[in-house]
Image 1: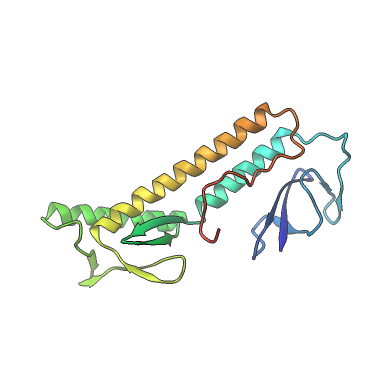
Image 2: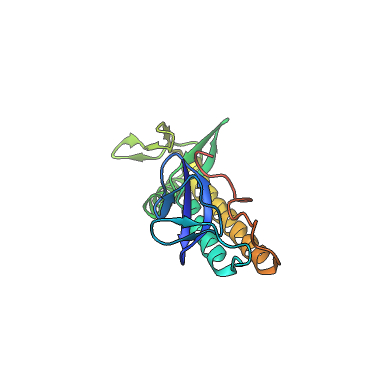
Length: 183
């Protein structure tokens, strides 16, 4: 399905999705720059310019969405995607803390982290599970930080491009982002 984001009664973003994201409205016909009166999309007059503020807001929204849309970690020869919501990130930091404790006690990077005497099994975004070793715990936190940095850099690049563009009518706020789970 096609969905659009509306800010200040102007369509600022259009995406193709399987499920309607929060804050988006389903529309197969609305385009960036079109006006929305709460029920009907109206093509915007070519003489009405698209302004920077709604595009900046769309960039901010996409940055926030992507921060919570997962990050990849290579485990052996396989890429696994992990959740990146705030609760999950806090749990990842806890795993890394436990991994540091294990290393301080003489453990190895290949040792599995255990809780209650059982190896920690972690659910990934594709529904599979992985066993968390000391190395994987460190890799989780490193990969999450890298994904957040790449997303932030993309948002800053978008804002800089928007600020210097003379014509914003064809600006695509969805281009140039790092991949997230499902893309």
